[in-house]
Image (cartoon, rainbow, N blue to C red):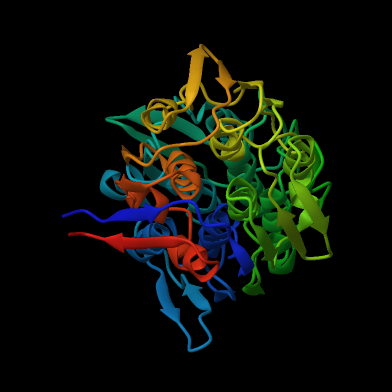
Length: 419
């Protein structure tokens, strides 16, 4: 039978948990290995299903992937064996589209299946393709695949119509291997974008403005290898902080970058959560009951959409009425129906959810629908009275490294089972 998590709620978490490397920074870093024939070493890759999918895809394209005794992953693509990213791999993970830019820069040709991933709404790649055309590529969609060709990418000025993280990253990698200078206007400002810029700089590209809305990238005639340590996962960090808060615990979350979580920490303080912020850790002490608050998601440095479900779960126990407005994805309230099974009182209307706090959740069998929804259900189970069984946890495994073991180490009564 498929794995599920069994949780006996009501235990305040305590002790210290350590955050893993960011999934959303690891995936573009791995894709960047396609830009060079030299080895790329990721020093701290998280053990996640999405990372495994990306390494399988790179191997299909000609990479030799190995892992050393210290846990680092070494990727070398001496020769690109294929320029096609097949549907069976790309359909399981939207970030697979990140191989498009590096393949186009390195070989001048790429055939990549239109991407899949979590069912949280339509996430088109039109901004990626618009940028590639500006760089001189010919683009067509044939039988569900993006087919791109360019004799040599040339630097250009690209203004995206909306802020897109994977689009910015894809264009950055293409521009790093292009001839001349590329300017990306309306670029994503997320820490993961800045982390990729740091890697590309080590490989030989010159990048200015990473972390701002305007990036200038001077391509290199030949990019080299690099060693790279990925930034901490700010979404895992935020999820663990909420776990401490929702259980009324006293938990220290270590190995994070607090500056990447400013909007989340500010909102949690508004909810009455006690926070002590250090250089690389946050001590969280949960209130007897959270205060109500309103949340609006927005691109970084605003409140991240990837933390919306988790904070909504906390607000479900608040004293009062809260409102959550989702501005990034149009189908990201799929956790609401499952939270209702546990006693939550949440009504949705389009992009807005109104949450009327209840004193407690009740354990129940629930089903995860996507990555962050699965985390939200685990949080609810930790706080609930009685037993919660979360099924379809393969969603969780895409983005959280050994989450149940970290929580168990902090006192949670949680176990994975397939019985």
